[in-house]
Image 1 (cartoon, rainbow, N blue to C red):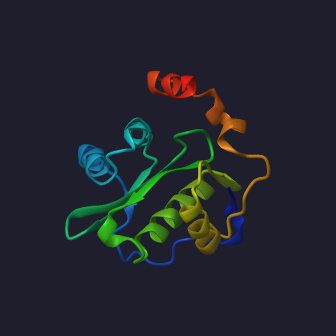
Image 2 (cartoon, one colour):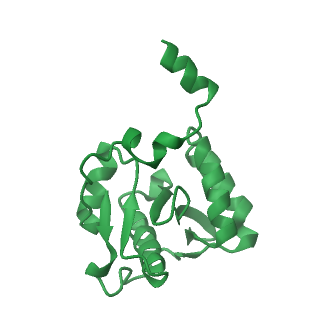
Length: 161
């Protein structure tokens, strides 16, 4: 999916959920949050670690507790994600605030568009609603930079079935 970052002068208009750039001292807590909330997304851990080193990870904090994170420039330049919100904070605006904070940061860096890769059906509706994102024709994962991903033993086993 693609988002034109210049459709808004400023994307984020509120900071209801303590959204901010992640401090280096918060890095382990962000990784622990991801392991706990998204145990099946082990690939995210490396991408998050990269974003943390680059200062390209934002978090939302409520009552001194991380409730969501979003990163950009991990998969490739101009890509948004990985991105996740604790289950009890979904549908309350946390995700929108995180997304908008990343878009503002990307815009400041000079990006005109944000690419949102590997979007499932549930997320597609969210991005279309809150960011006016649109699907890029002919952009299935196997036709994008994801096709260069190094295959794991599990991928090879699945391909053999």
